[in-house]
Image 1 (cartoon, rainbow over the protein chains, first blue to last red):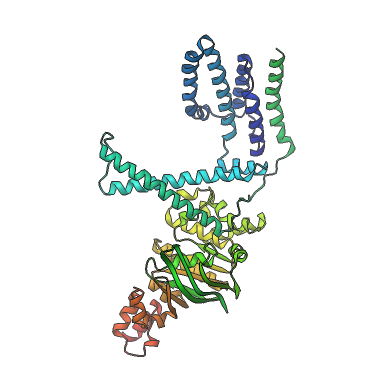
Image 2 (cartoon, each protein chain N blue to C red):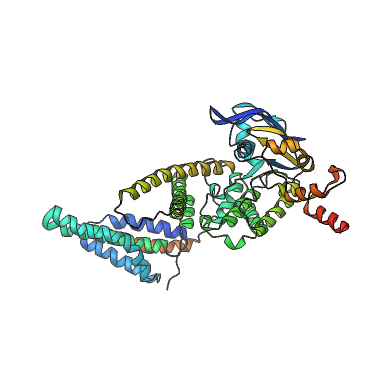
Amino acid sequence: MIALPKPRVKVVMSLFLIILGVLPKDLVMIGGNLVIGTLLLLSYRIPLRTFVKQLKPIAFFMLFTFLFFPIYEGGLGWIKALQYSGRLLFVAQVLTFLFYRMGIIPFLQVLAELRLPSIFIELIVFTLRFMDVFRNEVRQMLLSLRSRGFYAGNWFQVKKYRVLGGLLGSLLLRSFQRSERIYLGLLSKGYKGERRSLKTDIVPRYEWLHCAVWVGCVLCLFFVGGKR
Amino acid sequence: MDIFRFNSVSYGYTKDKPILRDISFSIREGRKTAIVGANGAGKSTILFHLNGLYAQQQGDIFFRDQKLDKKLRKELYKHVGIVFQDPDDQLISLTVSDDIAFGPLQMDVTAEETEARVDKYIKLLGIDHLLTDNPSELSYGQKKHVTVAGVLAMETGVCILDEPMAFLDPYGKERMASILQLLQEQGKTVIVTTHDMQFVAEWAEDVIVIHQGQCLGTFQARELFGRHDIMTQAHLTLPPIVELMSSIWKGNKEDMPIRVEEAKKWLVTKI
């Protein structure tokens, strides 16, 4: 078993793999990438269930390609569906590798270290934070409604839709007000539009071997496939 | 020396509904100051002015005798830390450690020093086991402690706490009181807003009474409890100990015990 590389190596490596993985159109090359992707998961002993979990959100899109392309493009539609699904599957393999034992925080940290413009990182952080705020507001408002006897059990009553419509309006308003206060909270601590990072992970040079080997494999396949 | 001076300050969220009306008062450096008043009196709005988050629409605010202009207001966070009433408004990061480190890093404190401060204050507040947790998944009391740790880590000379005791359990209140005590011992100026008049009696050296956006005066706690006119006007009630002692105290009003320990001592001598 090979030890997982450091987050920075993982991010750079995954980025290259994804770029190279979505370029080919040849089904043999896509198949080759999928073999490399499977080897990647096996080499780092990433559990199958982690990959399956990653598959859940994309399964719908894959199903859609098999339904849409054959109807839209006729006989060649199956090939296009296989192309798109194969690429998607490879990306899912790489993302499984990327986020295995790595949370969103180290990921953002690496993006900052790689000098990604802070506006993008801030957007991700605030979107995640806002989702938390939004979820909490929904939970509290639903609890408040239930405490006064409202249950959304039967969805086929106009009266309930009226209440839920009002709820949606006040939810947006409350979330907006909350985000205004959070902005004040940021300003109170001297926020000037850039988040500073606490730790910078030092990556030994040999760690980049992981990147060289796997990206090299996909790159070789890409050039060999191109000549073929 | 006055650390803050409000000179005829007015502020309103809308033009027709002013929150602060021509308000003037001072806050002394190194003192424990409580700002009291009914809901909607303008206490939190005052605190936001003290941190430079709001800019007054009329009048002047002085910080250490320097008039607060746009430039100084922007730099005020380096001198004045504020803990909001609702911790959810102030938790901005995805982990507790990141949230506590946010302020010092914005102040250009080095990463090593910031890490040392995070370590120091999470231990002080007893939240070291939450270091990697997502702040939004914590209980109210834990969130409050995280926001307090975040402001303490900034190590500012002035610490402002908006309703620090609100919604805390007795243990949380005790811990918060000890933190306030510690801040005082470190020579910091501590300003709190509160409705808890017993806390005012126990803790505050100066009490600023706010009513409908105006200042009714600055008092010492004992002096304020004797001013029934002010208490009634500001919709304040006497703390239980003062209420009890007022009905049995026969001596000079200025010597009447207002704190739990003082009252206990006096009652023991009498029984």
